[in-house]
Length: 483
Image 1 (cartoon, one colour):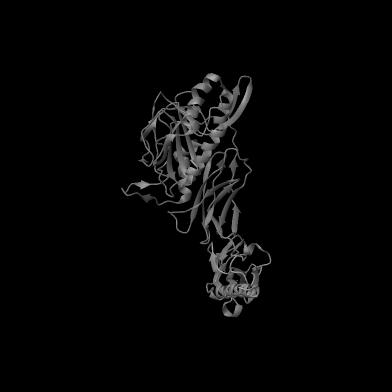
Image 2 (image 1 turned 90 degrees about the horizontal axis):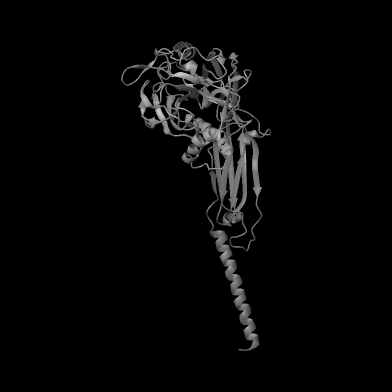
């Protein structure tokens, strides 16, 4: 074959390849008939100041050409996003195109969007790079109505709390409008949720605890949120009685650490032996103490929304108080004070391995070895109220068991951070430690909890009246420790 014929053949082949490529490109461009996919990642049917608009747009064919997001209200249009993507080469087949677009914004957090209550239309459009529709491409469109709201829930106090002590508890009964999704009492950084009042129509209540270490001047605030970012709050007119807590000095020795700390480390896989008595003690008294407190707070979130308890709580029978609520302890090692902590509960002692009674009706939600508390049982009494029984030598109840007031659930011991055989008893409300003395007093329970709720009491399946005011055995504790 001559050189001229070879050259002609080469040009013919090259022209055929180009023609084939152009035909394939046109086929690809014209053939893409699938519009972009628009997905609202989060529902956006009701909105307020903090409601996010989260959407995802995708086109895996010819890629995205443009996306527009608008709000329309009263014939006025507000553009939230408008994106034009770099044009894809007319001769390219896939590649180089923008396949996805994501948006995560707070539309009504922008002051440029008028805060007008009512219906708003959300309009989302997207176009791809297809040559369909005489080079217009494939269009996708979503339009939906959105109910917007910028007014907070309404609150009305029905029963103001009586005076509350530091470390003590109280109750407030109130009304909250139907749009209230989360409501309750806030004290400092602590939130106590509210619940519908089962004994009084159209009302709610919150049991709350005033933390023992918050200043008495800390406001007690009733709050409600509609879940859309509209927030209401009302300061409660409640008198907070300050308390002075006792101080104690506890001397720790290497022998004490060897007897108490090493067994705790051995029972707690997440801890390691630091091979230093003082460091081991501080690891337990600080780090592990904080972890157990956090777990108790988390445990309270699963508390049942019902009154399982029945009247006043009972103190361990025949017991003597060895340490009271909120005793401030200084721990001395050698010549130095190495740590300080509050003792949040009562240490009650009788005799070795004394039978421990449930302080009230409820459901066992923990029965296990539990850090500084050793063998521990926690009973849920409903609405975030729980009792804790620590340092047990043995268990007589298991997790999930429903127990009655006075039922034997274990025996006293010295497991965990205990120097001698006794029961450590705590009461907690939403994980906040509270003073048990109040709850051991039938008159206090009646006047401070039951009366404000304005019972008719419920009956359980057996027909027995249940609730917070059933008479209880007298308080065996005797006079409380001096302030």
